[in-house]
Length: 35
Length: 220
Image (cartoon, rainbow over all chains, first blue to last red):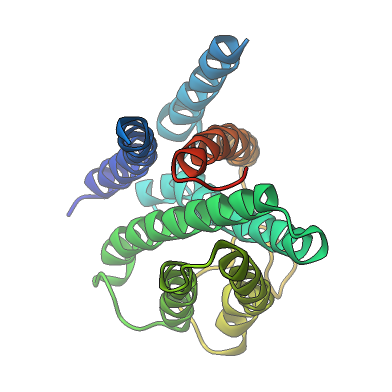
């Protein structure tokens, strides 16, 4: 794996991770509102 | 105002990305993978900060017995665990590039696995207790113990044994491996950006968790 590919993959992991956490919060809120 | 803060934070993080990919030069010896310092280290730092936040609010739970403090302690522990997972994944990819293997049970990797297990158990404990008052007090005691162990796993154990993992800022020689001034600038800019992002996400998470608990019938 090239160095740049590693850097890009890790950046994606961090970005997707942070956005994923925000999506989780949104889902949790929606679930609570339905109750 | 929240929109302004969100926009400012977005621009800040875009600046971090520009700095990491374009502005900072690659470090000697590590090549282009050295750019991961601007992501991997701030993510790990945020994780430690979240665990410390959880520790502080867990002490407040025991002192004041307030559910509001428990919300903050739980949210911080959850964020800390999540950031710790991100740091582990980015670390594994970095290890593949520099050590030619994703995982080789280096002391740093072992200590991070133990830390992940410790905080996963925190959520296991929370879900095992149904009585809210008992739950928040038990969870608080566990989070305090976990946070006392955390600095040993993050800072002490990897330095006690022979490890391939570099010590970027705090090392035995007392010298930073961020030799170039532009690398230092981007690193601290990134550290500040991730710290601000953590506080923004923490605040958002606490507000959502409060609403969720109200719907679940908790007195918050």
